[in-house]
Length: 450
Ligand code: AMO
Image 1: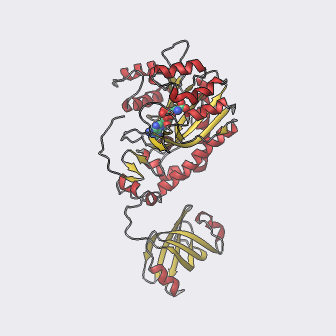
Image 2: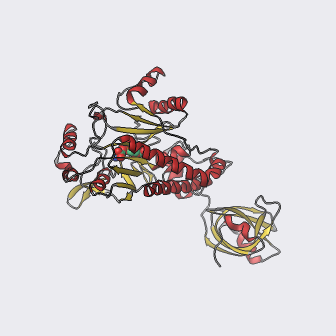
Image 3: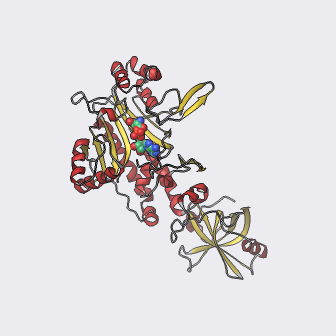
């Protein structure tokens, strides 16, 4: 018999069905036992009594929560149950017995996260069984699908950038070295170099979804050593603002789809209203927002970067002024940005790049790229990057390359902001951080502020 999902059961009242899933709870009332069964689509009450099939009754009696079962039974109207029906168990097969007690408590709507976060992440597969996390994973799927769909609908080609590369993609020391036979290689910090290759390859517009690795000992609520980057690169642009506009529309499209598909559930489970922004996101220069921050009494340590405190205040100030949760910040000093950003020819110390902030954190960096062969080499030289280390990249520009620009969104950060989680670990399927490689590892933890 084919499996029926619990959410479809109302179409089967009076009929025999086969449901498969996990034992959520058991209420043993002596002669009658209620077993709540859970699958990805919902929960249903099933029932067995001693006056019925005694073998079935005894099997149900011996069950422990979180075991996996295969039940065949009759869907019957039941006024006392919220859904209005229950399943009278006719046959039951135990697929897998769970050990008890569980190492963590699975979050329930009435008991939020009793176990500590590190322990929950150590047992992530059990933690992901909660209603909230299960919904988070469904929303993540819709997020990725909508980003992708938007790009495809807007003439982008999907590329697969390699994760093992011969030169560091973002520069700096935050790169994992790996042994590649008898050579040194790197884990890609972003698909930056290869998405630009897509432009030199005349794919016109490209996107990619894939892992990005950062060897950064940042113990914060928004840094991972491995995250999933959603990257876009657009050819033949006149301004980085075209890139911003593309991203703005992609985000609006994604939020609209998430709201349509999961808005009600998100409201129920997260007590949260998904807001789809209307109109354009506001823009502000680094200089202007620094002035506003100073007026608000927020200290600034750096004229080309923002502290976490400043990032939170940027969003608060701008949302108050414009009513929009998103804000593009631009006109960063070039020396503070990646070497591949194009310099503003009217204001050479500045870069033609931007960051997008959402509800207090940066979710995106982007820019118009330097596509002129001599200039890109010059930019790298200024940063002390050896020409030899980036020779393959420079070649993309040697044989003619259209003007272009792009951006990247950290998908775990996007999801964290979307669902108001307080840590990025919560929105990462199996997070790696400086002290965690799947499970927690001991590495002499040092706090950093960034
Ligand atoms: P950047 O380094 O700013 O830019 O990264 C872009 C976005 O990726 C996410 N992100 C991270 N998420 C979790 N943990 C981390 N350690 C981490 N680092 C970055 C953030 C960030 O905004 N190549 C450029 C993008 C471009 O110009 O196209 C880049 O990687 O959401």
